[in-house]
Image (cartoon, rainbow, N blue to C red):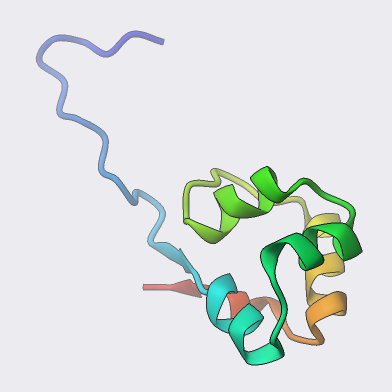
Length: 80
């Protein structure tokens, strides 16, 4: 959808959710590639999530990530 000429640009982080997957991975001594293999998603998709560019995440994917990392969603996602 095209933006109107006088419309304000969309904010970079409109939802206020920050992703801390890199911290949890570092605590576990695990790489993003290893997590992707164990969760069954692509490294690219996990990278989009890790870098805060994801617009959504499936609960099934979040559940698999949490099971592999032995953590809770709140360890990965925080509302600023």
